[in-house]
Image (cartoon, rainbow, N blue to C red; front, side, top):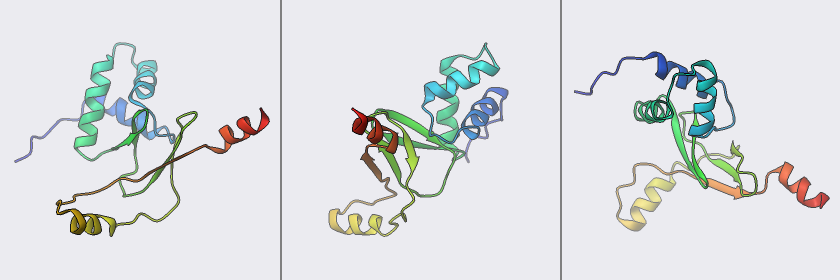
Length: 132
């Protein structure tokens, strides 16, 4: 039987910080947001609660180049990462749910899921590079 975890004030603050952002924040960005509301909360408490929220499927962790990002969306979807500024956005292309079965068949692995991250330059970084 899974352990029931009570919803603490700190966990609520962390979840609210993720809910209030739409930019796939880093753990440090979430810590700074939470810290602005509760100056006694520690970095370790925020990081621990992010992992608990991920484990309980309240949020997802995007394993992006440059470090983990956190996402409120729980559905399977792709992401795009800017290789210059590190911005992360949701990709508006269909998620390939059949890829798990194809890779499982080709490799013999028991595939549970996959993530897709596209990398490139965001429009702002393209404009900046073009202006130089």
